[in-house]
Image (cartoon, rainbow, N blue to C red; front, side, top):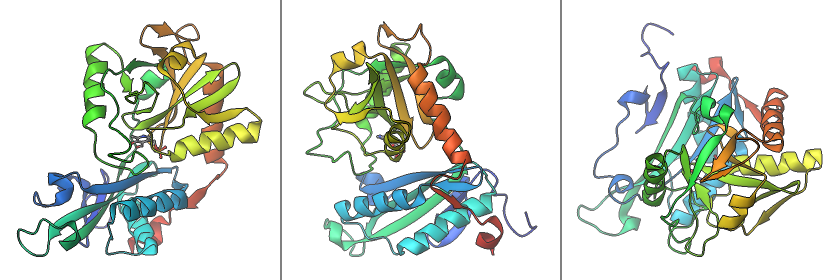
Length: 307
Ligand code: PLP
């Protein structure tokens, strides 16, 4: 770190054209991203100095932007360069890297028209986060099936990454009150959707299954489906009900911020002698092995991106 640069070791952010320490990054309280959750975002991880599936995350971010009619003032290539610069400035080899586009503020004071707003792009790289802590992953997470239903997909499209977390947050409080680690939400017809920050999988009679509705099309979920194809494990996207979850041989969760995260209990149902199951552990190991082999890797150029 040179003397004239701030200490970015706890994260670097890009806000209004400047790179600042992540802890110092600020947005206006008048930004509709804050007042209306009028925002979309994506999160990619850096593992051992390389982005994982960066193009897939940028593709999804572009689809989310289009769905929300948001236009950041940067091209895709510029966004990729900003993300790399945030990582490079931080020096982090393992990082959680977010790209965010908020509606911003109306150019005409008092306008209620979304099209009048100046959209804002922000980004940041912060130290690695595990959505389910590593010690909990090791013993197998305890999932609580929340009573609050996932917000209707016809109202808020769950395939567009969003900050409408009211239902997920209520689910988390319920789970913690019940002594569980985290929650999974059903839709109002009783089908399994997803949890706060992750997709859900189950293994039944040797087949790997993940819900077909109410969920983000997770990049980690896609990776798991790819890995199943590589090792010849049958896998399917299917409608899954609450009772399927309770009768599963194994359950695991997937996310960019944690990878494949095994589950040992769903409500009162205990699986695999209260420990992570063999298929979950195999996929988890393979996921990280493939990372180490350079699967879908984009190298971070730490030296060049800082200049
Ligand atoms: N579902 C929700 C609601 C999420 O917020 C996330 C990730 O943050 C996921 C699923 C997992 O998606 P990915 O594997 O792309 O990180």
